[in-house]
Length: 339
Length: 265
Image (cartoon, rainbow over the protein chains, first blue to last red):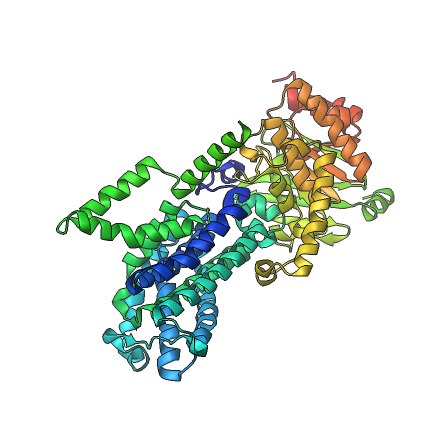
């Protein structure tokens, strides 16, 4: 009996993660990234602006998963379900109730926080691969739930819902796409800053304590069940906001846009960006948006296989994802400065 | 129980009353009672399988005793879940070190203050003024403890890369950060060499003297227990075998028999 307890206590952490100090970018690098994100849309075509908006939106969804997995050490293959709830919330509120698009986002976020928090309750009994399987079931069930005849009046059933794209306010001279991009950028930066604050705070430390050692965390007074479900809630809430933004940007929601494929893509994005490294989320997002296109450019018929090979190369060459590049660059700069 | 013992029980900081633990058909602890007074270093000894770890796990609320009670300042702790033990002033360390391996020394000790601080996820995300004030007060406290245990130099190092002896000190620092009244130490000398055990003994005594913390020491290492404990409780096969000063317990025939075996066998 006591041997079993010892095993639990000394078990190696399931998820590799970076220390908090290395969780963010330096202020110089952050400034450059923000400037690029501000200036580039002024120089490119509308379609590219649309893609950049999607880059930010998936970036948010990957960030949300990163808080859950990198922060609290819980796996999820069910993020597409929360993304779908957020998307449908925004779409239904805008189309059926004429709610302003910007107002639908906090509602989607709060609703998904609730959904995530509730889902976190049964998930408390599971960990590792079993938790991944439970969330997988959620992702598989969601498209079918959205197709149910009972909800058809609101969801539009299999047909889905068309969402009206908002115009730039105050008569600003910019295209709808560009306005939406800057709107998304502001939301993304705000959520990123809140997330960094959260992980640096007492709550974030409680998440990481649970990730590294549940029994020790509990002995320090951390309510393990509460913080695990809170991590699920926060992650689902951010994913919901991303889903809402996605619905507005794509101007369409349909059950089959939110299948398990989306959940796996987000998981992929997190791994490619670096588990636990929040800035990596945007790089992971770029990978899941652009690399399939690149693969298609190389071979139309075998795009899936090419994507697989590219993914394999990334995992093989940089197992820690984009974070590894960042660490190498950081060390190089340090060396150059010392010389 | 005599009148004197009752009086002593009333002023005890922690008292273990007739605690039994049964796993299936195996009696791991059988009616064990003892008291800990404020400022004491109490050594809990016994051969393998004596029930030391079982008792320890009852105190940290990982096990629920089948009968009996454990009182902290007169209040039963048995209705509290494990995460509500730190807030009433019971801190602990682990047998094989259970630190938060991917975090720095500083963050490990910061997590130690969890039970003594409060926050919510919204205020934390927005980094409101009261959160910032709380964090800076907490950081001051944490650095005081790091300085006290000579850990300032490694404050930003990830704990998994530190030598075992240092990790043990980090665990002590983390436990002290919660400002405990009682510190439960589970085999702190395990894995340390002779010199390190000596240093550890001095450190435990210093913590008791400087910070007025009562210490329960569960230990195999007889040398350590006998040199620093004021009071020793010896267990064997789940029963209390002897109790008293280190010298009394050391010369107790039952204890000698339990450790060395009797002549008749």
